[in-house]
Image (cartoon, rainbow, N blue to C red; front, side):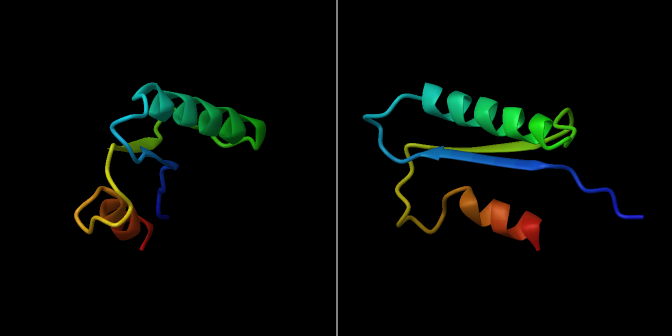
Length: 68
């Protein structure tokens, strides 16, 4: 049996935004997981911080590989 962990990906795109944005996004996703009965204790969390969506080397590529 394959064991999968929940994945939480957060990002903010500008250095003019606050890093707290990622914390807020993660908290909201964890609340939604709990509401849906998904155990978020072992969730893998990946944050993109002040990375443009047009950059090809940001952490989102890691997310895509994990989802495969």
